[in-house]
Length: 147
Image (cartoon, rainbow, N blue to C red; front, side, top):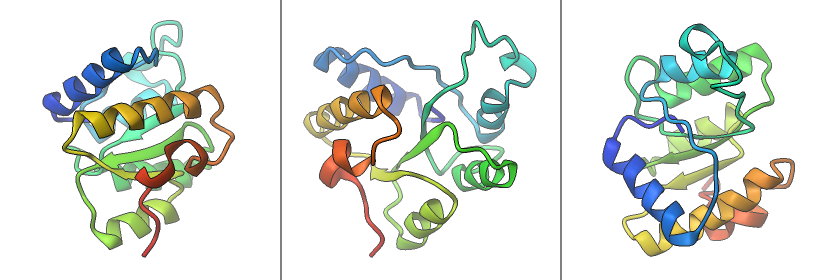
């Protein structure tokens, strides 16, 4: 998870606890750390301690590099993994469109309700177990389609 707001990380962890969802969760707090983690550079070079992710939750509003810059970097590198689910507070149509153009498999606006987040977390668990299936099949209406 690339997320710079500690409260949002805690909110996700609480939803995981409440649903009994067992997802491996590593958190980076800026876009540069996200690209370093994905590529196994620097502090993330030890893949035993920092395994390559198959699924990543990505906020768009990150310090150093935005989530869109992370997606653009992944596209430039030709990376098909990790599968990226944008989890952000932005519901701007331009952000949604750009995220999909850059390779995001899903775009989810952060919910204000723990109940809705619990449902999203259960869908994330199903997607994490099989990231080759369409994200829509497990996340349902939480996906923000292109308008």
